[in-house]
Image 1 (cartoon, rainbow, N blue to C red):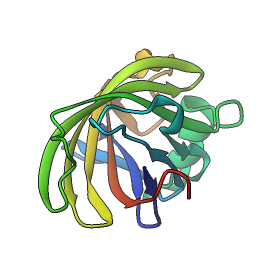
Image 2: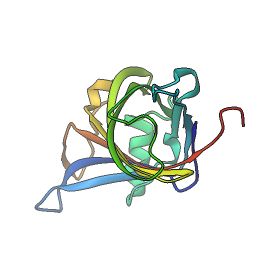
Image 3: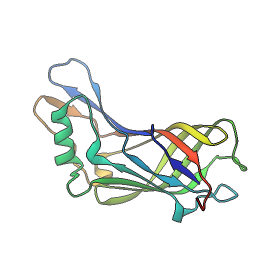
Image 4: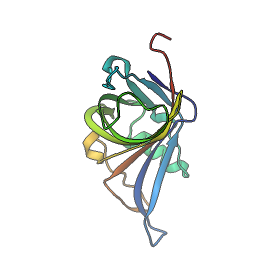
Length: 179
């Protein structure tokens, strides 16, 4: 079993075109309120009952407070849907037995619940394994409508791309399953 530890950070990236700029920029929201565990069987299959990652969406912050308020209230609707949850169901490309060192690229597929909608989502993972720790980055993307969210439309923002990129800087620690 691997447990999320402090230092894990989740973020979204969305390309936006602001009225005051001649070029698009990335709107980036970040939180360190990430909890959960990933449990693997001896053959590195996901133990579904012991695997879930949860992000508190109410704590996402960007470089613009008004954007944060708008996203919380109108896009994510965090008063109704405060959490995003990912339940891994399958890992592809992870060697068995698990490495005790080195870098591994693999995919982690599962069910993402966001904004009251559950859909399959696959993450691309680049992880570095140590004796007791795993660090790395997981990325995935989807469209606003995939999770019944409206594309933000606000004054001074000319356009927002319909592509949300999720990134998680993972910090995991090995735990004994009974601990």
